[in-house]
Image (cartoon, one colour):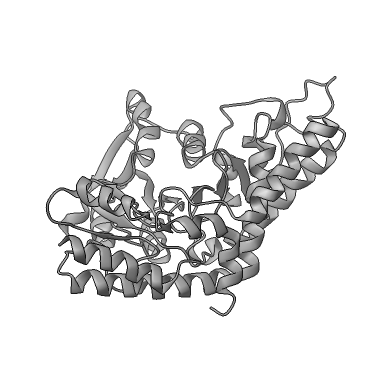
Length: 376
């Protein structure tokens, strides 16, 4: 990647002080994103709401960038504050009936589980796929029943880094008339995605990981054909058409997924998300994915040479930016040693999770491997 030093300049302070390999948890903010957010705050400080029109323009620019990222239509995008926000729109708005089933994968991130728990009071059943029982798509297909309404999955698993073939998944699930909801937070920003080609029905994601976005930023993609099936359960002044007409009690919902944006926006965070998204799209998601693939391939080879068991699938088509391995002894001690060496990774369920992004270098990967070797 010829422009690597230019890209690293966006993270000048963190790259000088750390080997930062923890983007699956929280990414640093690019310099340009911080500058744009500071500009917003200074404008608010100096001018109050005089420039409010530009805030609303930023919303639509961000919506358009998200649509571009996903190969979706802007009217299929709702701005949210998190992955959970998007899943709650589905869990509270779908016309559930007693006996309906939701299919989940065991041991995925808890945010994919909790939105469905209250539905048990309505007679909705949560069913589990056990990923250790064999090939995952085959296990999902085996678990489907005529009562399955939604299959809810992570595109990229937060622990193992396993990536699902979304096109193959939707083909299986749609065959019985059920729908697919995807948590894209561990894949978007590290991989390209086309929701039209993959035919997923709903996708949720947050900004603070691979997209280099601020906290409390996220979005929902909702396929236009099923929009009317999901009721608005949280209705606020921004849910309706003509919401700036304060003398009306018009109850006509806004067209598209915007109807789920019910309350005052996080304009500061959305400003930052817009800048980061625009930058990633300018670089190109395919280029970013190729770079991450090369870094993680070298990382997995080096970990294997150390004799450490790797949880992450080897084929590049089955992974993204996460590499997870088992370490001997006390994992907390190893994590603390790495932190003293200014190498930032994560522990998840006792496993070492390493998640480089495209601006990391081969030298940083080798530095991690050298320190691990010294500890073994």
